[in-house]
Image (tube, rainbow, N blue to C red; front, side, top):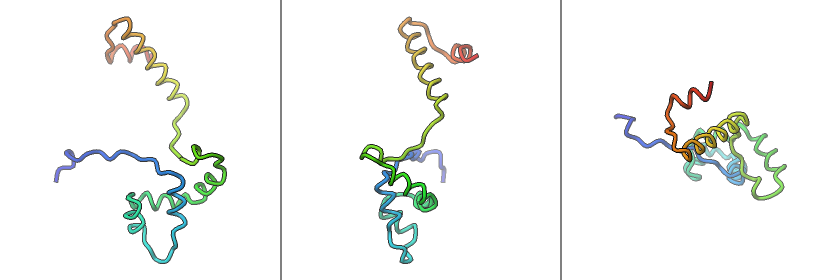
Length: 110
């Protein structure tokens, strides 16, 4: 079967409460597949949650309000600043009606 026609699965953020529920499941022989099916997650995600149990519990204890109870992946701050500057530069070029193309962006990067 050809894998090129399949849709790409987007990465999803699992709320901290859900991670705690997964970690608090009774360990009475229930496998990660059964837990994954119940929470509609991948089996590898369940195993990763169990592997990072200490960090998840620390995050949960240090969470002060509801908005901080969601964990996500952080990106390098230099990359974020560069992307914001690039977006601002491109927006400025489009206002001036200057065509933006690959070579122009590469030249600016140097």
